[in-house]
Image 1 (tube, rainbow, N blue to C red):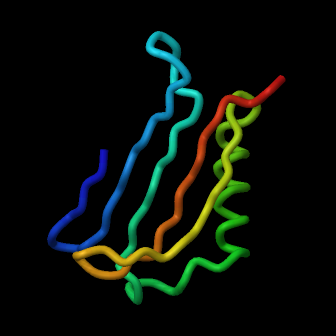
Image 2 (image 1 turned 90 degrees about the vertical axis):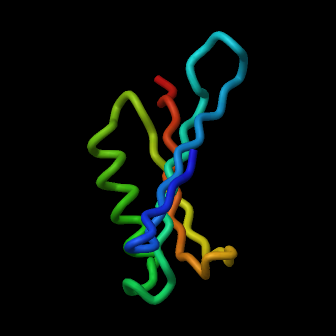
Length: 90
């Protein structure tokens, strides 16, 4: 699922990844799309800080990894940060 707010250009996506037809998602990817130039670029330090905050909030049950990229779409260029949420291995 993906959506964009026309008034701001910001977007959000949610993608569950399943291993089979009956079990819960193996991973959920949450994407945030920010029009390039709207905010300062997402630095590796900011990405690490956001990962730490998310992991502290969801631990010990879940683990969060973040990924950043820039993508060109028909609507413009976006800075993207994705959070991959998986069940933590105990």
